[in-house]
Image (cartoon, rainbow, N blue to C red):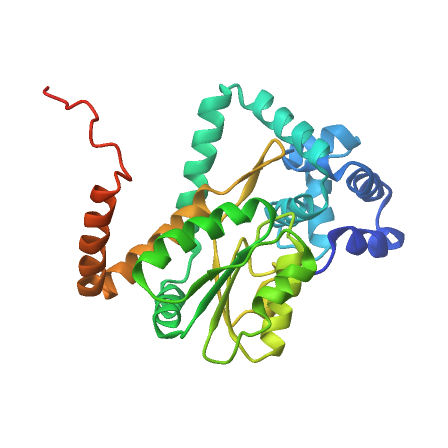
Length: 294
């Protein structure tokens, strides 16, 4: 059900729906962004039907109940809302919560991390660590806001293993120029969250056709990256106004780096000792920071 466009499902079902259910259907088609955070009772009030009619409507669409319909609405909102619509939806959400912006955002991020922890497959996570360690060269690509995640992963991974390439996304043609030499012994890590970067999807498709192993770091099993990945790590992502919340994805990437560092502990210690001498010699870090005597 999740991989089919919810709006198409509703459109096809309309002729078979009752009069009250048609009112719900039309409201969702026209204002699905407003329905995202409405309970079944509230949606009934808005559309002039009973709560039980809303529940029956969700079941008529093929869902187990109204909460499953809300999940489908959330997936729809992630991929279809424009930046300005995202601001309006998230502002309404925060206003209805009666919480300060700081508390609402931090609590929401905390919830995403807990949800990610409960849902992520640890066996897949371990396989990802093994794939990275066994690859001859690792290519990392994240378009748009996900470039920050890709850059973070590249920075630390480059300290631990040889031949790590951060693919830049300034122009779509340049992406392929950076990865056209990729071969079967290499690994490609694609990172993208709603609204998904088309460049990242195309790059994943290209390397997969070349027979290269791929890892997707994304938000769900219905992400377009998953179709072109051998392994996928999913982390909850949601919108905070037009800003993407990447706290949970960053935490998963951090766990990946820790997993690799544990496996490469002896080599990593030697590398870091050498780097520490260089950093001290060329004053990379501020060594004159005030000491805390308390």
